Amino acid sequence: MALVTNLLFLCSRNRLRSPTAEQVFASHPGVETASAGLAPDAEEACSAELVEWADVIFVMEKAHRTRLQKRFRAQLKRARVVCLDIPDDYAFMQPELVALLEKKVTPFLK
Image (cartoon, rainbow, N blue to C red; front, top):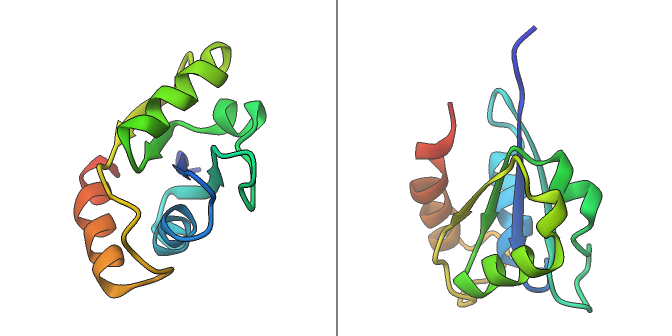
């Protein structure tokens, strides 16, 4: 059985960037994807269980990494955290966002 890498994509409110990333990589072989937000009003709020589930956590901005580390320090023992530096300037599934995600995330996939 092939090993599966669990990818968690985080942004602020889980409405545009992280759900786009989750969808873009959902059909990629050998990965499972999830997305969540770090803001209190996120569509899908980040949880300790999600952080523990993830092998690699992709955050869209440095502020997300800081928030993640403050809130989930105890659960961040094994996951690698990667900041993609993608500003909140895109619509859901916008082609430019998809291209940027593919360019920045693909090098981290086995």
